[in-house]
Length: 277
Image (cartoon, rainbow, N blue to C red; front, side):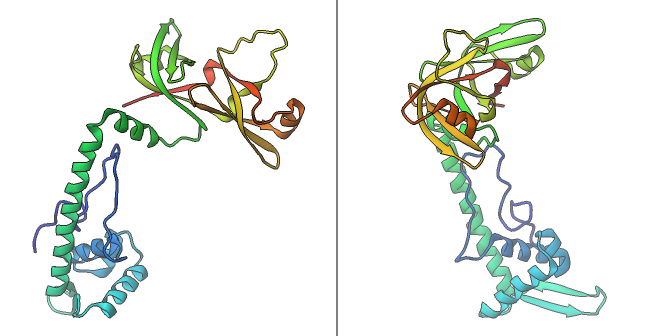
């Protein structure tokens, strides 16, 4: 029996790196990759039931996939035997072996192509940085990219300022231990995360000054009204957008409308800072 190809399942595929910027699945005429993973598992285990578990399929699902392939193939892909010293089993026919061999070759070429394009993307600093940030998945509606411009460390907490592309600044307060763990210093690329529910919208300060460190002035560009609450988007100079979730009662009380000046206010403790690992 030939050794499995470079993929962990022997089908020719390989695990995708967690920080990969480019991902794609190889598919042949609508045939799922799992079909070839199933063939590779049959080659190794000699059993359809065990191969189904290896490929992450139910026994019924594996049989449905194999039966469909058997109906469409010009020659049998599997051969079964019963009894004997090994108690029988299932193996690939020469046709099945050839089909799996071709798939493995294509999968290897596909993997090398992706690796080359990945290197090309990473060689472009602006594009690579943008794609890396877009990969982040978070429930925080607001995600701002910038660079650390100031770090003020105290005995218990640390205040970090992140400069945005439009010239605005976002201030975050965290524990001194967290700041040390993130290795924050001037010039480090960082992302600031802020929940939409943590943002208060102001249209008139009435002569008062607020204690909240973050006050971003802009113009209301979109209002999405829901059954109970509304999403209000404030666009800042430079194009960055701040989203705030407010009640419909507050929306009506402030008479908010698109094109109206507004300030997004939020506390420094409401900001979560992320840096590249």
